[in-house]
Length: 181
Image (cartoon, rainbow, N blue to C red; front, top):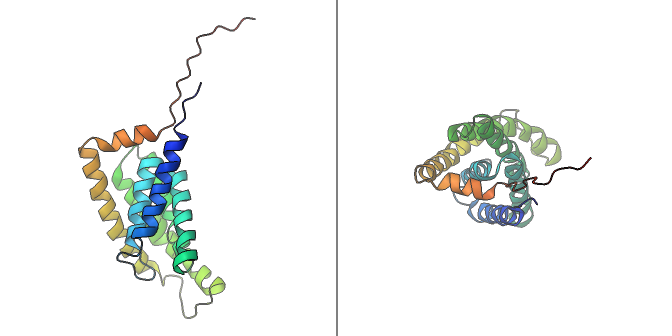
């Protein structure tokens, strides 16, 4: 029988989404939302790239519907959240890699993808391909620094690995039975 921590992961995801929606207005300027990057990186380190992507997507949709935020809420989050988790996983647990993934994913990829979205879908005029790069990079550096400090402290206290282990899907299957031919 496989022991699943599905409920725990869903509760943690819901908490990240709720926290992300509530703290996103802090330090927010259009095109720069440092607290979203804090949530992206922390979720990526705790739960992995798929959950970080889902978290960023849900936060972005809620912010767009409830707060009237433009599609930057999505373009400025999903790439960074995903790459943060991927880089963290590929680096075998280096927190700085998660931050770098957020900076590259959001600061570069997300900011450049924002140009056609805001120009052709949202109708903004006078933008260039690199219009959002400075503010997105600054936002990721601020939020990434906060996330880095938080995660380093959790790691030093031995809490980070406990949280990660609690959220993993643990396979307790031990096939004790012999197959009869």
